[in-house]
Length: 149
Image (cartoon, rainbow, N blue to C red):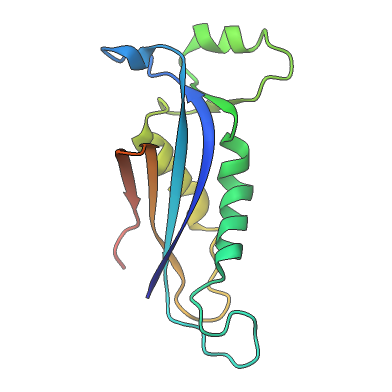
C-alpha cells in the first residue's frame, strides 16, 4: 500500500549559471509530496490501526526536518559567493546554504536524503520512503525515488 501527503512552502533561490531568468534572485511557492509504502497496520487498539502511517505524523516529520527549515528562506549554493556575501549583510536573514545548486532536482534529492531515515518501521509494517515529489510550479515537478529493495 502507498500513501502520499502534500505540504507547501515558499522559498527563494537562484541558479547562478542558468542561461535565462533563473540566474536572477527569485522565489517559488513549492509543494512537496511525501510517498511512503508499507503494510496496513492491523494491531488492535492503537491509533494507527488500519493505516500505513497516520498522515499527521508523516506531515509532522516532513515539517520538522525539511519544510520549516526551507520555508521563507533563501536557498543558496555554497559556491555562489556573491549572493552569500550579500545575504550575510542582512541581519537575521533566513539563509540555507546547500551543497548543490538549488534546482528542483537537487532540492528533491536532498529532501529525500534527509527524510529517508526519519520514517521508522515502528509497527513492523515494512514502512519505507518511496518518493519525494517537489513541485517548483503547479505544472513542473521532479521525483526523487528510493531504490528498489
